[in-house]
Length: 128
Image 1 (cartoon, one colour):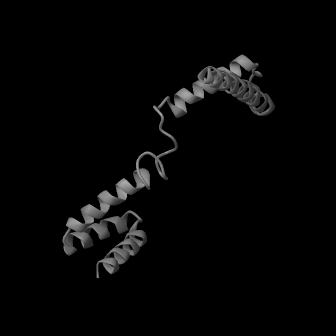
Image 2: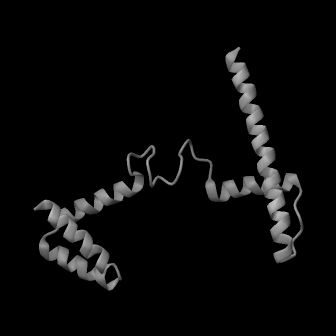
Image 3: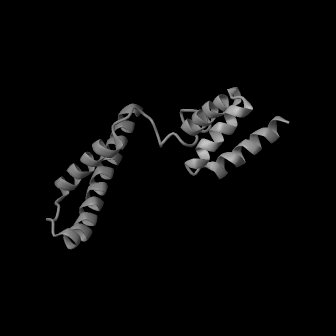
């Protein structure tokens, strides 16, 4: 019986959220877009369609993933940023000092010199 009540509550919250987001989208569209572009106003059904379309185009329908993966989350403490940082640190650790210097010169030409120099000084200080 508890699961039935939970199901009804979840359905009610989802219904209220869909109605609310639909009205918010409709009113924002009708307030901004016709004045700027001269396009038509939206009714509630078209606003829901616009929300679904934007979710498909920009958000996708992932399986339980939350956020961009750049903070705390399912991919560990620092998500994707930690993974890339770890790969670069491993790659730099395998380079000889000459290879690192050559790499730094190439990165400096691309405009990354200051950032890489700071990172390398921190890395060399931490190994000492």
